Length: 242
Image (cartoon, rainbow, N blue to C red; front, top):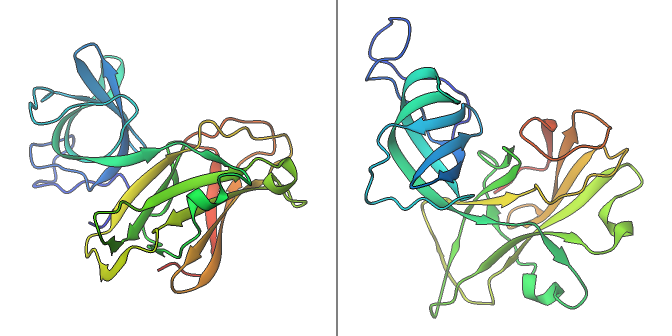
């Protein structure tokens, strides 16, 4: 799946407003439950109220990240930004930021990954990753984690960048056969405490193609902030990802 993040529409006519033929590309969103219903907080479109919430096959989990495409029906729908008809929705593995210590370092592993540059980035307060998995053997589940050091000295460098690591543990159980369909994972950054003077994030990972790689994300402001949808002003990827 190719993930696009621009809020454009495919339409069957040129009239103003939305038509039944309008639909979005796959977009990142977070599930929010309310009573027996749910709505979506989309990284691009804002809050979405699904009119077809009677989807018996879909079980909503609050805080779950999803990739969704939908038919927009109207704007400013009550307290929501849009009313939509969901066309496709897929749950994504959603994980918190974890703390790396000397005791658990081996648990997180440090194996190389085939990370895809397209679609990997920060939005909605999450670090979103697409990678092609070297399929496991013997029924073993590989582990992917986003971690920060428990040492403040290692957490922020002298240039003001906070250091995180994308870690992968394949437990030496790999088949050499890659899943042809990229796998998405979304890591919440909302527990990240950003000290005053911090300039941005550097996320380090081990690439199969390029070895050690750092992704640099700059903050929009040097004032204390919570990591949110608009906390960053672009990405400077050092080295290409594969």
